[in-house]
Image 1 (cartoon, rainbow, N blue to C red):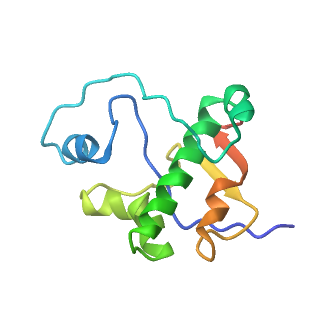
Image 2 (image 1 turned 135 degrees about the vertical axis):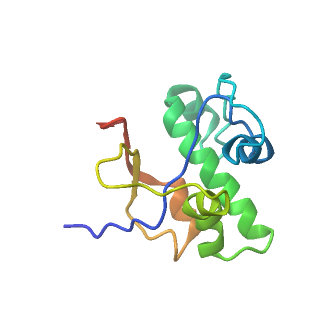
Length: 132
């Protein structure tokens, strides 16, 4: 049996492209308008793998890349994980998950609190109740 580390959760929706626009919508300062999710580059994958992988995996790897960039800017691993997930919701004054709420899940074989590079190697991604 493998240990599971659930430290945080993230939010992504059509129309929430970029932190500035997302913050305004989530804080209620600007109305939400559904727009296509921008394509991600997933630079952590070789070019031939980028063409073959799903949009969900590309998005997970884009988040991993942005997390590494936050760490390079001086944030600690815990600050990076918080900024990418629950900490952002709390800062916006939004509630966390309640029992019975729907949630997507990313499982890692290594603890990203110890090494953020683990975010670039998701072991399992569960989206809308299905493993992708």
